[in-house]
Amino acid sequence: MKIYRSHVLVCGGTGCSSSGSKRIQEEFENQLKANGLEDEVKLVQTGCFGLCALGPVVVIYPEGAFYSRVKPEDVQEIVVEHLLKGRIVTRLLYDESVEEQQIKPLEEVDFYKKQHRVALRNCGVINPENIDEYIAMDGYTALHKVLTEMTPEGVIQEILDSGLRGRGGGGFPTGLKWRFARNAVGDKKYVCCNADEGDPGAFMDRSILEGDPHSVIEAMAIAAYAIGADEGYIYVRAEYPIAVERLSIAIEQAKEYGLLGDDIFGTGFNFNLEIRLGAGAFVCGEETALMTSIEGNRGEPRPRPPFPANKGLFAKPTILNNVETYANITAIINNGAKWFSSMGTERSKGTKVFALGGKINNTGLVEIPMGTTLREIVEDIGGGVPNGKKFKAAQTGGPSGGCIPAQHLDVPIDYDNLIEIGSMMGSGGLIVMDEDTCMVDIAKFFLEFTVDESCGKCTPCRIGTRRMHEILDKITKGQATLEDLDKLEELCEHLKHNSLCALGQTAPNPVVSTLKYFRDEYIAHIVDKKCPAGVCKSLLEYKIDPDKCKGCTMCARKCPVGAISGSVKEPHKIDPKKCIKCGACMETCKFKAIYKE
Image (cartoon, rainbow, N blue to C red; front, side):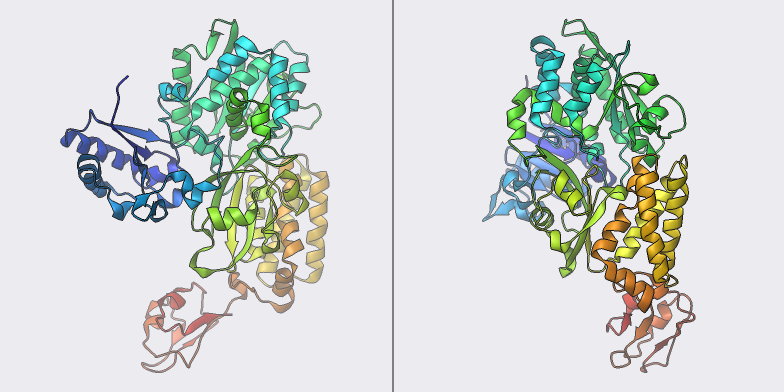
C-alpha cells in the first residue's frame, strides 16, 4: 500500500459543491502535478465536515490545518507554501482552529468539542466513492460478525439492548420494529430505507448518503438478516443528485466485492438492494405512503392497522427505518449495546444529528449526545445569534414540530422532553430564530407548506389545513377577530384527532406551540393591528424621522414606486398609500432616518 506524506481532504458535500469545491479539487490536481507532488500528496474528496457556514472546506493532514472559504485562486498558494515549503497559509485558516500560533486539533474547536460523531463518524474522513476506504474504517466487519457469529434473534436483542430509537421522527424502538417483522408470517419480507428527507432546512440524511453510503448499505443487509428478508429498497428524493450518484456507486462496488447479492461471505445469505427515486412529495416520508410510491402508485398513506411489519411493501412484512437510524447500526454491532446505551439519557440513548440553520453563526451539521441542552447547541456549537440579536425561539421537527422559546433554552434535548414542551425531535432540522422573527408568520409558513404537501386523501387534512392557513393569513393582514383565534384552536384539535396520517395529525403543532408561548403576538396582530417583529407587511408603515433626515434624496431616488417626496436638504415624507413596503428606502438611508412601525 502506498504511503503519502500528506493528505488533502476536500469537502464534496452539496453545500461545498454549490460553492465550487469541484473546481477547487481540479485545481489541486493541476497544482500538485505542476509542482511534482502527485506521488507524495493524496487528494481525497470527502463528504460533509459539518461546518457548512465556512465552505468550501479543505483540511490537510498530518497538520490538521482547517482551511475555510477556499477559492480556486487560493489553491496554488496552499500547494506551494504549505505542501511544498511547509509554511501554513494562516490567512485561510479557520480562526478558531488556531491558538497561540498553533493549530488546534479539530476536536478541540468549539464547533466540534461538544459533538460526538457516531452516525457521522466517516463523513469528512473517507472518500465515499471508494469502498476500500470504508473497509479500512472497519466497514463490513459488522455484517461479517452478524452472519458468522450471531443469530437473527441475537442481532435484534443487541439493537433492543442498545436503546436505539428511530431517528426519523416518532422515536419508535428500532429493535422492537425489527422483532415484529421477524415474527410476522410471510413467504417474502422487505427492508426499506426512508431517504425522502422533506423537512424545510433538513439535510442530515443527505449528508450521510453523500459522505458514507456504505454504512447504510451494510446496516440494511444486517436488518435483512435479522428479519429474514432478501430484498431491500432505498427511497431517496431525486433532488439529491450527489447522494443518488454516490449511493449508486456504493451499491455497485458492494456487488463487485460480494457484499451484496447471493451467498454473502459464503454463509448462504442473499440480499439485493435497489434505489427508488421520489418526486419530492413530503407525504412520502410517511411509511405507508412511501411504500405505496415504491409500488408505483400515487404516494398516499394507508390506514393502520395493519402495520407494515405485518403488511407493508407489496402486502408483505416490511421494516422501514430512515438513513440516520441505519447509520448507527454497524457501530452498535461493532462496539456493543452497552457502549451505545452509555450515551444519552435514560429513555433516549445515543446521539442525534441536527441540521443547524436559520439565525445562527455556525450553520451546519452537528451530532450531539442526547440530553445536550438547546443552549449548548445554539451558543457553544452554533456560535450564537449573529449581529448581536437576541435568541427568540428554535423550531425543531419541521412542519410536524413546534417552536421552543428562550425560557426552555436549558431543557435537555431528547424525545420526551421535546414532546413535553410542545415540540418533537422529528428528523433533526433545528432552525434558530432571533428577535426579528414574527411567530405568527412562522406558523403561517409551515401551514402553507403543509397545505401544498397534503396528499388530499382525507378531508380533515385536505380541508382543515387550508382553513387554518386562511385564518393565519387573515391574522397577518390585520383582518382577523378573536373569534377567528378560537376557530383556529378548534381546527387544531380536529386535525390532530381525525387526520389519517402523521402529516395531518402533526400539522397543527407549529400553531399550537406558537399560541402557547407567543400568544401575545397573535393578540397584537388581531387587536392592535401591529406586528411586534415588524415582519407582516400589511401591518407595517414606513416613516421618516424629520429630525434625522438630511434631505439627501437618496431614498426618493431608490423608491421603485415614487412614494417618497421632499426638497433637497429638507425632511422627506413617505406616502403610505403608494408605499409597497419593500424596504429599499430603509436600506439606502445612511442616516438611519427611516424606520418601520
